[in-house]
Amino acid sequence: MLQVILDHYNYWIAIFLMMVGFYTVVARGNLVKKLVGLNIFQTSVFLLYISMGKVTGGTAPILDDRFQVYSNPIPHVLILTAIVVGVATTALGLGLVVRIRESYGTIEEDELDLADGET
Image 1 (cartoon, rainbow, N blue to C red):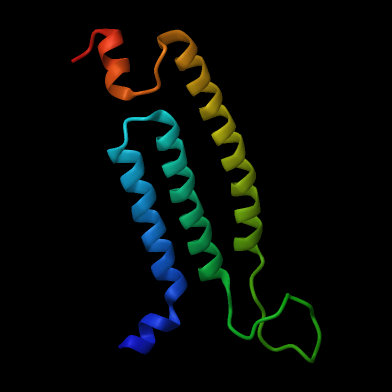
Image 2: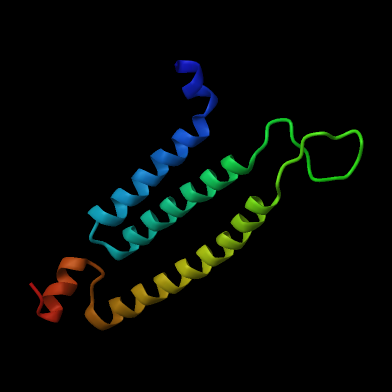
């Protein structure tokens, strides 16, 4: 049983990072901390996809008689695209946080709710 867990340690790391990121997004009121949690969650998804796309003993899909087992490059390419989208999303989120700070003077959710008159 322990060997099975150790063989798939990267999945356990992805699950741990996913839970840490999710907890940070849900439990924190600071908007910057929420963005950090969102990035941690996103990183765990990247790790999960790359882990699933790895084939033990596989090589790049080069058509040659010497190679028998190939790794599919599509998950890795999708993650490269997702990283670019993630950076753009983080930049937009930080820009919104800056504008909220300029308008309301705070980036705490509770204080923003009070400033808008919501309870």
